[in-house]
Image 1 (tube, rainbow, N blue to C red):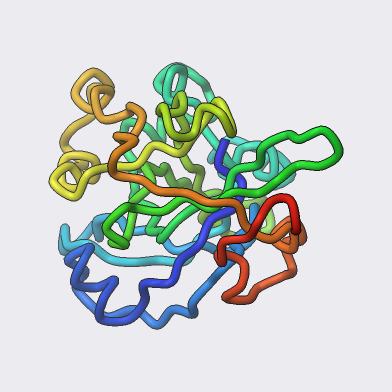
Image 2: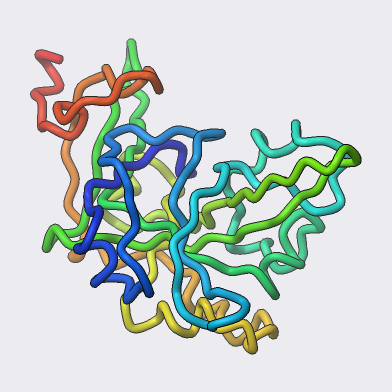
Length: 227
């Protein structure tokens, strides 16, 4: 799964990497957690240009009676996303990119769960494959939300966890965001484990277990025996 991630690339750097139409105002985040507001990149309906928006992490289907379902839909399995009622409409019409500089996964040890931080080998930003939705309540309340797609782990992550976020190559951003591409089979080939050689990882402090903890030392390597 993907339950926590990091976004350090902000301002002009994120605008240039994702070819945004404007320079967004974002804060550096070291421990983004479900139900919080996260940045997504999607195409503007009117201009067809890429724009960054803040939405709630935890997808609320447009047909949901209330918002509580969102906390259970932070991830969508790539193997079933095209068929699941909660995701299939968004998979056809509302795909997005979720910018990140890395993510956390936890390894079960004898007495605790040890967090690990994974990022790109070249320290460039990553883009998770995401879906977004717009939900409107009976009282007129409007909430935009998203989910992160996951797939089986690559060789690097497999000893830590059996799932990982779907990470898209920069050359595939355009295809994933293209609203004219509605047939699942045209994008399903993108939903695969990211190459192990393009990712690096290390154990980090157990302080990241607390969603409220937001400091640069979240991603600092630690000695597992001493942490």
